[in-house]
Image 1 (cartoon, rainbow, N blue to C red):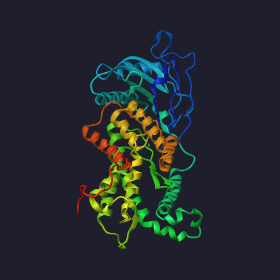
Image 2: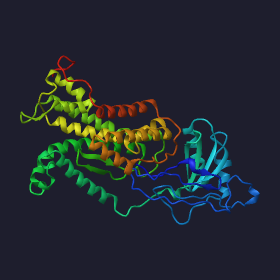
Image 3: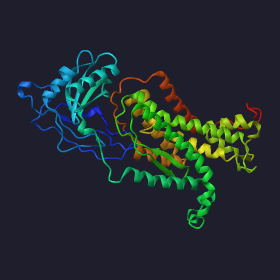
Image 4: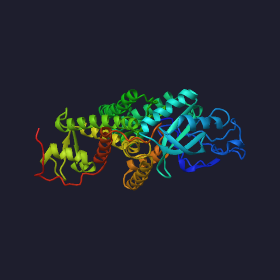
Length: 452
């Protein structure tokens, strides 16, 4: 969800940079990455100034992934780098010890002074005073030594890549297909024979109540993102709803149009959607267990299905009590199944992998390096699960090809979020586990239950 630019610092070398960036396919349209090297005639920014005059072009590179470069590769003059080093950075913010060409800008290594957030504000103000909107600074962590680095790039390289198909048109097509799969998912008679849809198109209306409940949870999820994005000044693109034959939808992919300022704001943005979806989904699930079916019959199920989710199974046992018995048939309000489907979709998007909401939460909580490792573990576990579950198979494919990352750089990635926002992020990850993990205990009489 953002202008997709990746700053992998491992490829940085004096007078030359190597593009070791993994191409992202976030909630953004994927783009190709072109590499370029500094010519032999260029020199590093910290070379002897006598060898070059102030107009020497000393840094070059390719645009970031997902970013459109205008014209020839942009090169920052040595005179500009000297101003950045001597007048923008300093003892009170970031004391520069060396600099190297990096991407289409310059990477500065040194010692961070004071709190990262306050230092970043000072550096940004000084760049604005001296260069206007010509350059953008990022304050990041070098994955090689876990030390702070500053990267300055021309803003011209940060223009989002345009797409050949209008965003609203593509999103509309995906939305229409998702409406169809949500309806189809709630009509079992049509699922067993897809070709019969053309002869029984009117049966799709039978799936309307279930589709509306699931769509309501998905809508709450997206509204949560939209409300927080407006509050923190982040611009979002049009959501692309992803259809699914198994559960109706895999949720929505929504790209971030501008750069997120810091990890706390990324955490607030990423957690808002799942928290809204989980809250509404749990309320509807409780209502489904408590309220009798409107037709007096409901749907007949085998209680064994509640073993598929720790959250659903625990709530079912708590409310139904001794009525819930192994091997016996049970009549429940269909709202239970509809709400459960919405919770599952919400939980899938909260998996701590790639650029899913859960992956962004992981990044905001523990930083880029740790979140990358968590993504690898999550994808491996999903891969194992896909051997036994077709939903897991399609989801791991979706993450790998469309949302595996990397997450776009934030303006300042060093400062940790406040504890209250960390708690919200951890709560989302825990709810994801509760929905996805199985309920291991048998449904036998005599356990704790609540009568309504």
